[in-house]
Structures are given as structure tokens and as C-alpha cells.
Length: 215
Image 1 (cartoon, rainbow, N blue to C red):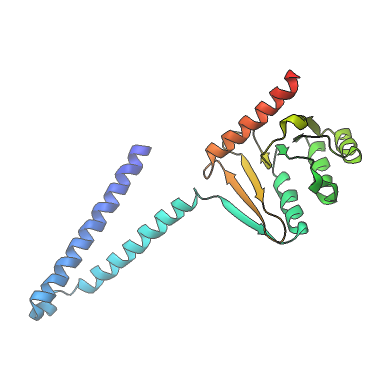
Image 2: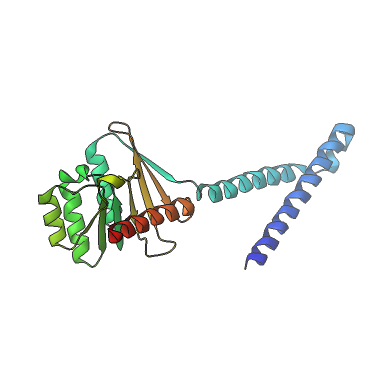
């Protein structure tokens, strides 16, 4: 399949080169022999075709390149961030949240309700923190099947992220936040835009679990 795609690209490049050569030859003929205008009835069509081909190539490569750029979302309010998190976890068969104390979730009632709904439908939720989460929040979520993993104050994770579908290769999404409102920014990576970063996030999760199990 890859060889066929390569050959197809080469054919298009050959057509583009031929069109460009004919167009340049026609323009050169007009430049050096102005009297040959009537002998070049298809020059206008060649120029149009060349322009269209250039635009087509730019569009194709731009669309292909966009696949490898992460999505960036800027939130001005806490409500916007909570809405994003609710939508993100709603599409995960497994969700791992790495945070410090998970303070943002205490007031995010809609996100809590979505977590409980997803757990009841069979999704796996785990929360990795450096210190215990506030008891009422932890007790309610744990009662519905959310797993809490506390690595301890001596091993405070620098990373703050949410990883979904970690158990489905190619379907992962990783959301990393920075800044505070109204300049809160979330960068979302997937299997195309950030496979290496997703791999490192998985390593952090594995190491954190191993650290807890070893103590």
C-alpha cells in the first residue's frame, strides 16, 4: 500500500513538473517572440492548471501537517475548564488523572457526576496524587469504583495531566494544562501529534504505581 501511495505521489509530481515546464516554455516564447501569441491558444489553460496544482499541493501538505500539531484550548473561566474535562473523560474507556491534591475537582460537581456515570458504565478511573484527596470527595468517588493512588509527599509529581484510553493503542489522548484563569491553557495530544509524550505519560503512571506497590 505504501509503495502504491509513493508511486501515486510521483505521478502527480511528474504531471506538475510537465505542466510547469509547458507553461514556462509558453511564457518564454511570448517573451522572446511576441508575435507567437496566436500560436499558443492553450497557454491560459496551462497557467490556470499550474496555479490550481500549486494550491492543491499546498492544501494537501497543510492538511497532512496539521495532523501532527497538538490541539490547544484556552479557557478564561473555571466553568470552561470544567466543561472541557467533563467532555474529555466522557470519551474514555479508561481515565488516569495525575495531580497534586486534585483541588480543582472539589467544586467541579458536573465532572464528578460524569466520572460516576462513566464508572457505572464500565470505564476505569484512577487518580494519582502526591497527598491524600479531601475525604468527602475521595469517599464518594471511591464508593463508586474510582481508584485513588497516593505516592506520598516525598515523591511529589511535577506532571499534571489527564490521560484517557491508555489501554487502547492509537486511541490515547493526553491533556496537559498550564497557567491560571483567565489565561488557562490546555494542550491535547493524540497518537499523531504526540506519541512520544503520551509514551512518557504512560511511563509516569507505571512508575508511580510501582513506587506505591514497593512501599
